[in-house]
Length: 364
Ligand SMILES: [Zn+2]
Image 1 (cartoon, rainbow, N blue to C red):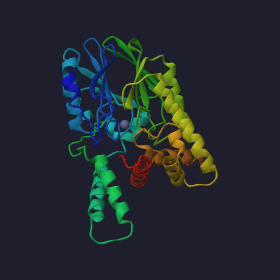
Image 2 (cartoon, rainbow, N blue to C red):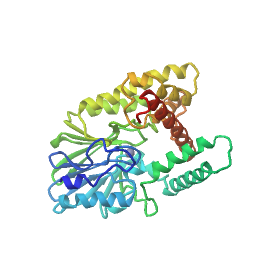
Image 3 (cartoon, rainbow, N blue to C red):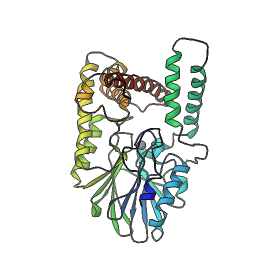
Image 4 (tube, rainbow, N blue to C red):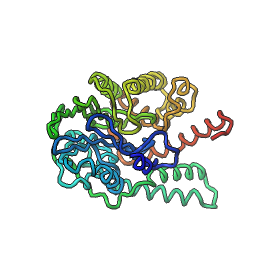
């Protein structure tokens, strides 16, 4: 087993914060963990029943998914994966579906509707744009904001660098539901519970009562700042409270290491803190981007204990979503808004790192 772990290093350049690879989460339940839980470093899970298994999520591209399936193969030799659940519509949880041949693929009706609107082409165009910016940013000709251009190009370029979308054949769900759905996986009862809209419009969590394990997917980000594309914040908090009420002993997040109830509570704390801290400033008329910058670069986030979570710049998206709900104008961001959000996040991440470096006397 140890040899296996060592092959799952972070995809982005940072030292591993926890052990990756195949990890037992409970009786006959295994998590596939991808440190450090940043963009596209997504987890999946496997439940093994008598003669049949359930895979919960695939990864962002076919290559990463094949690597995971190869690690899982000995476990499912007698119990093939006949069912695949996609927990939500983000590509890093289902763009590897084509590799799970012949399985029934289940998602919520709401997630499936969003999946229909996606194409890997959009993300490839985004990557090309970053390359173009990189060329522009390295140009010898000075022009306004050249430094910003270089920062954005580096951030977006790195965010997408580990992934290969050329071979993705989008393979959407074959069965959808709303509310709750109980499955029998080789004699084991599994409950799918729709908890969206929260992270995305159609989030679900998977409750495995006989192992006391909850697969929380992207309702839980551990050690990583969560990103709220859909909201509302109350919906996300309600989903976390539902998770706590299940009586689970262990939780498998969509990003980050396996955790217990305390970490679930910390995420509730983050949302309550952000709602309070951002809400007051938004009510005073500040723009969401300004509010997020002030919070991420200020002392409050340090005092609240959230400055060590990776990706603090995601507060930009979160505050924007909070604001949209306040104004009753919430809608899922389109490609344009996502590009804009990434550009702003790049600059904020850069400023956050610079500030931390100066606070720590340049030790970074
Ligand atoms: Zn994810």
